[in-house]
Length: 189
Figure 1: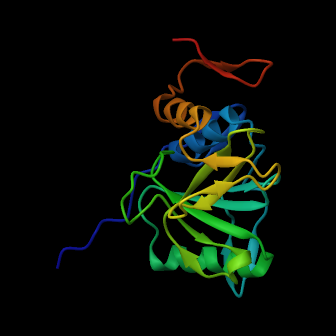
Figure 2 (figure 1 turned 180 degrees about the horizontal axis):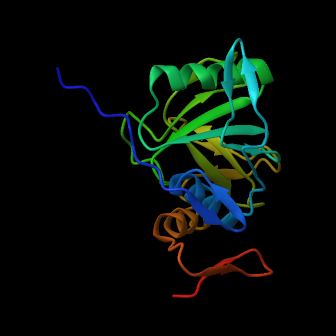
């Protein structure tokens, strides 16, 4: 039987004074930094009915837990995310792969356990941004339109700032960089 190999060698990576367990997590931190989304890395651990779990990121402004995986999450990993969402009554998202926009496929790039859906999960979630105020949130992709929760303007996942953030996170070189006072990431290569 051919089984999908789920083991991926991780490379601990330093970024902006934090040691991330993997380069993948560091790339997501870059994505959040570029968009000026405050995050807390491995902020808090939880005992979920005997299963210890430390989610990768907490986004306080959006009130989301974010887990990142190199490949689509296993059933065990999905179960942890669902338990976390129920225990904390907070929407929990599991993204896989490096930050990227949704490509229109039926699978990706995130599963979600959303508190407002009574913790049901579904895939096809992605970041969207308001055209007017710039607010960012995660939304189910198959909606034909989105509106901002803050100013009721249109929002979408094709915003220029989102596209740039994906590219910056994907192409970032960790060997020589600094963070400007503005919060912008500057590669010095």
